[in-house]
Every structure is written in structure tokens, then in C-alpha cells.
Image (cartoon, rainbow, N blue to C red; front, side, top):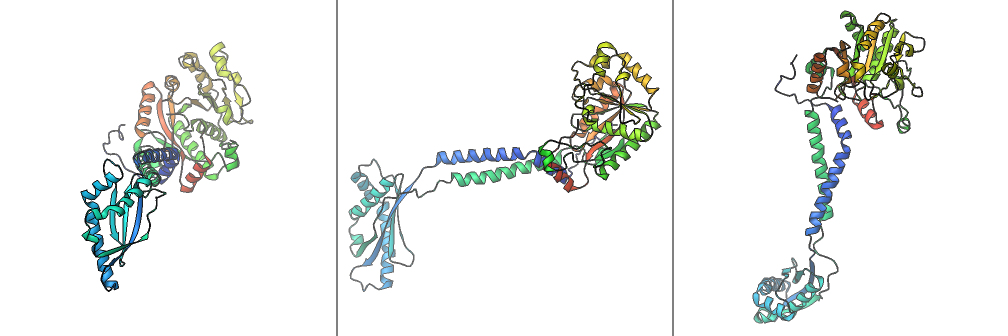
Length: 466
């Protein structure tokens, strides 16, 4: 029975429904991580940002004694610009500027360039303050002749645009732009990781997965049915009953329940089983709803059926059958006073279905599981009923189900679509078998066959019955 766990290689299977579900489920994580990386990027760039200010002036360059042709002026401007670059790079001029402005050193950037295809030369100075940039530019204009008079002896430099004190930084703060990029890049990276792990996640996503990966007999598939038919009902938290007796349920869902019930009944009859425990590995896998619908279907077949709510930590059958406003203490009275629970059984709508409801949460319930008189009572009820279905606590959540396995010899495991890992489900099966309750099969619950169903389910939200 180790057919799957002994397999060394894991299949990488793409399931669009699972991927959509996981992306929607963890959308909050994508947003939070994207915002976090965005804020971190913003703080790093913003804290390291140092504004620079640039002041500039434009000269018209013409040559002395020339015929002032356009060609001559262009050559003169090009030559003057090259010489001026050497001037402003010289240590002599930098020391002179530092002396004039009472600076420790020349801590600015100066450059000269020609405006293409003109005889205009632009002189720029960039410093860490607007005032310093303006002052240094003026000082260069007043003192560049100190370096070399002959450089400009044959050139006329006419100021076309006077220098101004810059009002804004010339190097924009890129923190906001980088933060936006970090948001989208990190969001995409987290999305890719979620999709990757979604594909790698070894859960049960199809009937084929169930048959291949689990060490239990496949007893049927029950398809997903939206409990909220409209957005308004979801907002008002008014779920639709998913009992097969509800006439507004989809035909596909009802048919899947009917077919599964028929297979379960055939399995029980072939093994001469009258009592079975219906459980799951964890909560919210729909075991209680499955147990209720199986009981209803068995009773429709003309059989006398007893459904017992023995999920003592979170009883739910009274809610499924719309009996929330009533108090059911049959199990509690049995524990306290040894009152026969048969007196508390409720017949459903004059049918062949009887339910032993429980609305009282019992934290210390193990004494019931170890009570031999309870087992004797079950044997007595088997003489009166054709089938007994017992809804118990999830096996991996509390020890009640495992303890009850010593009393109830057969179990049906409900496996919800894309919820628990296959290896863990197989471990639970082993635990139940070793405890004395043989797992006669499993039901694949809340399955999907249409992508739009999946999208619709996530849009309206859902919480399957426990």
C-alpha cells in the first residue's frame, strides 16, 4: 500500500484551477510583499539622493579680424570650446576660483560644449547648492583669462544668456520611479513563486490523482456547488443549503451525490457493513455535508438510516438540517447520566432518516470513545437500522476520530479538492487502519470540471461545511 509514497519522482502537473485559486488565495501576500519591496527601494534611493544644481550661460563665439562668415565662426566656436574645456579643467583656474570664493577646494563640475551646427558655446557649472553653482559660474566668467590670455586674444565672447540661480535640482530624485518598478517586479516575482509552488503542491486535484496517489479505494466524486448564488447573498452571509433535498441545487451536484451514495452503499453491502464513520483529515473538507447527503440518499432508497453527529468539538449537523435555534443534548446526557440516546433521535420529515443531533461542544469527550456501553448501543441500533453513519471530528485535528476507530470498525475518508497533501492523507489512512477502523474508501469532494465554476466560486467567496 505504499504505491505513492515510495515513488521518488514527483509529477509536475499544471492545473489551471489550482493556480487561479492559489493566486487569489495569496493575492494579499503578493500585494503586501510588492508594497514592502517598493517602500524599501524608495527609502534606500531617497536616503542616498543628493540634489545637484546647474547654472549655465551661453556665449556667441566670433573671431577677430575674420570676414565673419558662417563657416569661419563655426570653426572658431569649435576651437574655442575645446580650449575652454582645458581652461576650466586646469588647477590654476580651480585654485583661483576657490580663493576668490573663499572655498577650501573647487568642489563643483564645470563643462563647456558647443551647440551643434552653431557658433554658440554653453558653459555649465554643477554644484551641491544652487547658490554655489551660480557663484562659481560667475567666477569662471570673470577669471578664465588668468589661465591664458592668448586663448581668447583672437576671439570675441559675447554673452547671449546671463547665468541664473537655479530654482530646481538638475538631477531628479528617482526614488518614486524606482519604487514603482520595484513594486511591479517584486509582485511579478512573488506571483511566479506562488505559481511554481502551486504546480509543485502534491494535493489531490482530480479523480486520476485520487486513484493514483492515495492508498484507499475511490468511492466517488461530489462536485462543487456554490453556497452563495449571488453577490448579495454572500454579503449577507446567507448560504444556500446544499442538502440534496434543496430543489434549487444544480443537477450536476445532485447527480454526483446520488452516484457517490450508490457506490458507497454497494461497497458497504458487499462488505456487509452497516455502520461507518465519516471523517476527514482536517476541518472544512465538507465531511459533515457529505455524511448528511449520504444519509438522505440511503433513506431515499427505502432504507432505515441513522445519522449520528459525534463531532463533539464542532457539531454541525443541526446547522446543516437548519435546526440551529434548537438545543440538542442527547450525547451530553449520555455522557453524564447514561440516558439512552435513542430517545433523542429526530426523524427527518417523516422519512426513513433519523438523526442524533448534538449542539453542545464537549471538550473532554474521550470518555465516550472509551466507553464499551457506547459500542453496545451501536450494536443494538444496528438491529433496528439498515445503515448507521457517524460524523466525527477530523482525524488530524483532534484525537476523537482516532479513539472512535477502536469502536467503529469501518471508515470513509472525505478528501477535499486541492487541500491536503497526498502523503499526509496516506499517513492518516494508516493511522486509522492501525487504530482498528479500516478505511473502506474515500470520497473526492468539492471537485471542479469547469474553469468558470472555479472563477465564480472565488469571486463570491465560500466556506464549505465542516
